[in-house]
Image (tube, rainbow, N blue to C red; front, side, top):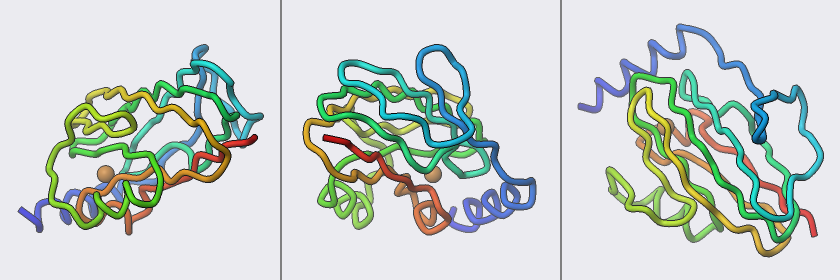
Length: 148
Ligand SMILES: [Cu+2]
């Protein structure tokens, strides 16, 4: 099983690099880190292609509830986990193949779209990542920067 995942990753690496960008509601894509979103409810499309997230930084204001729509455009499973350090430590050490509907945590099947909500109610930096074996090390991670 493990070599299958490695093989798939190698193929994905060979195939090219991802095109980044993130969108809010309108579907428009930004080329650089935009102004902070929120407060209130905002929808953010999170693309995944070639085992990379489409963006590495997202800025929101305190009091923003983000509806993450995670688009997995790869032929392998991925996950999107956002939260504080304890959340990531648990997932990096854990053996959970899938995740139940917990705010800020969603597993996404190949070529599928997952959804999760997360409320950013204090300023700081919150990691988002995929903790499937090898994916974090490969670079599937980024930050949500929460402004005051
Ligand atoms: Cu992944």
